[in-house]
Image (cartoon, rainbow over all chains, first blue to last red):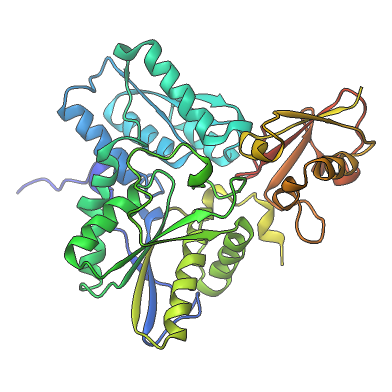
Length: 308
Length: 93
């Protein structure tokens, strides 16, 4: 009799549940809103998908070997994914992270044994990117620098997994795909896959409404270093969400849906509700699909929970 | 010598690209009001419509979070540094 075998970290990534959020966002009937619960990935966020693919790609291309240090810039979730992968596969890891990421994230990175370089909170994620580039340029032989903002394996992870999962789970009935953008990987990869399956699917990007925002992991593209893998012309439309609207959506999701979701998830649901609302108003049918990048575990000390 | 306010990179487009702005004031509230008066484009980014600090904005006087020091009434003195940081999850700078 063969011995039963479990899965390793990478084997647990993906195949996240599709959750019906229609009642939370005041949709239903002919207009439904469903969302991928990405916090069920082993590292707790959607970022396990691209991080796993970028690490595997590095191993295959022999750019990542045991004597190299994995180096990248991240505002948190990718860092946690890398930290899990590096620990499980025996690599050293150095992360450049803005100093104002949540204390929960700092604890997680430390617990997983990552070396963290905190960059200026004033400069946000762009400051972290600049520091990672500087370190890499100083000693390129020492590091494997996946560069999630410029690595095609980032969006390909979603093209290979998130897209096909959504297509299958909706039986091809998806009409709108709504995704928040940080690196743009989720939107580009999933969007490309879905568009190839059915060109009439509408892809909608979600950005913070202001360069100064509290939507961790998201980027206001007009005022940021636009990631190399992100094509701002790809989405048919970009919706801009305020931090306060995302907070309100998070509280509503907790109280009406029994789910504690994270900041970008709140932004995604705000935009999905807007899209669903238009369909309802126009008396059209629709299946709006979005991605909830993480849950609230890392944001429970935030003040917004206490607001009205 | 007035108080120095450190402006996050993304907000410098509203301060004529200045990384720091010198303002007068006895409390954090005074200094931020004076900042917004001098650079009106900043106002909606920092304050809500009814004049409260937006919930994701953290303000520090030197190293201290003003929410532990009396919020907008937190005292400032000449030479202090006031920094404005998006909270992105309760973080300190």
